[in-house]
Length: 402
Image 1 (tube, rainbow, N blue to C red):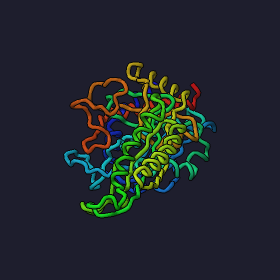
Image 2: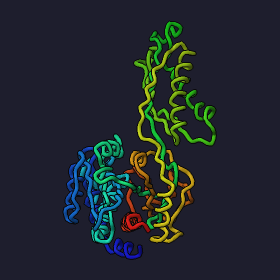
Image 3: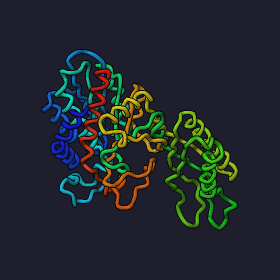
């Protein structure tokens, strides 16, 4: 483990160059053309064969003998955010930026591939490198799985990571069990009857009914599920009405539902339909509810998470390895892999500041690294060899069964 960390640290300049090259060419989901070309070029240089799934790339590093297979996943897509041009490695694709650290994730996977390729004669089995598109949009993990990325050879164990600015570079955190939430897209149509604003008794005001619906939806979380269960119903957009002196005949509400268990997820979905129907009816209106399921709950395998934690303690030392207590209602499509195979998803600190209190995600301190999905987001690049060493060490320990 010590040798792997030393070798990863010795790769610092290469890792920085690789990350900055990828950072300059951000591309949206399923359009990662230049990005996948850059990844394929690196795999070619390492002598690692690969296959293509759309814009995704699946590299396969085989050991000296047959055996088990572990997969390391790295997401590829960028966000529609304009990056400030005051960095020497700023985005060269106007309107897009790697503001979620996927450039770092790809770099770490390539770095792990480089370290493990040097040791392919030492282990049995194989390592797959899943360079996956569209994490930020359509959930690229699902079509990758459907196309067979976890087969030929059969993947037995899967690992993923995400950089977070809330932890300083050099530290990580893990959490067994539910880690990220499930998300469902919500659209509600409240239908009334139009009339002149001076004669409201002749119409059915969809805006008034919709306002009541927004208020009543909040009681589902506060009064219909246990206070020990986490859930959020957010209405983020309201559209309705045509003119100031006309009673609106229709209002469209759109939002999101976030939950941490399939049981609560199903209950809230049914409750939203019931609340909307009864509330709208109380105002003489009607409702149509459309709920589109998105990412599922990300549930880390407990044994796999402990395996990562113990590896991290060997590599980084116990003070730099944190056990997170609370999940987040953010979403992550790595959840699809964990529905198919045991594995673990963990957080890699990339912040340029002292450590914050445990479970402080979302509460960035003054002067700290900017938050994910911000145009000012950047990483402390000293986190790159840490991620490489931990992913490579975990893979080696697992393949060697130590």
